[in-house]
Length: 366
Image 1 (cartoon, rainbow, N blue to C red):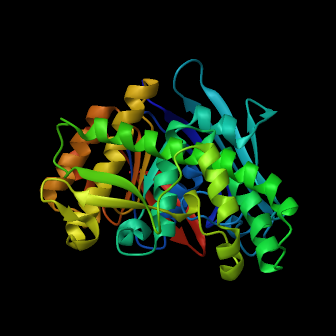
Image 2: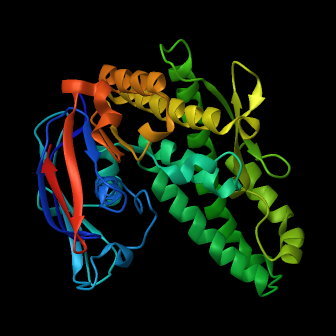
Image 3: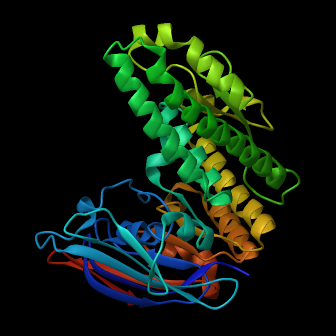
């Protein structure tokens, strides 16, 4: 079984005024010139999962200009059981809403129904830039295994913001901190446990896999000190750190201080010290491992969104990537400037050409 879109409708989304697409479960190759609107389609598909999508944009930023009427995305998604009709939309820049089979639904419910993984060019500098990006990358993988991870993350962030406000106001009364630190400890421990469980599943999925891409040994580390092992330990650490946190004006202990450390396993070289090509290959390897792990966990291959990935791989690795996607049975949505980048797929994929005229994107079967 595989999770796949049977149809996609976009209304006033980015450069697309109204587009309707009918597709099957095979990989989808989108080709066309830069700026035609290919990545906008991938972003639309990413919004059938929890969160802000692959660009992390606000709902207002996604609306088509100059109309700014709001936008709507609709899809029929197949997987286990009967196909489901999903809509997500924003009116006048308001927070996006979700319906499943015509009924209002939460993003957690959406995450349990549709598992989506993506790799975009902005991730190419993952290993050499700040820890924030690596935490987001890890948490997207965690979310694919555990849709409830989003709730824990939101609860932790909300409590931490309130605690940081107290710290900046130099509030010293312990009474004000107790309830917030209990909330942070409960949610923070859940976050840490879920992250470590996801890393274990990724390691198992990489072990012995038949793949042309290098395995990455991953470790969760702290930017300073150690992450407390239990909820109670984290609550105590937060209380003990108040004086230091007051001086800093922010919280200095917890899962928001974690970082993802990666190593090119066969070479023993830290990912940050690898070549640009090796870093890209490690990212592809992790996305494929995540997909394999999900297939083992839920019995379905997830949706894959791979933006401009073909252009950064040589012909051999490109063919190997396509072979692995097809072996998984995944519906992978991929973009590239020309159809030649997808030649190795042959009849295993459906080809769609994306063009742009007068500020409006169009999609047609090639």
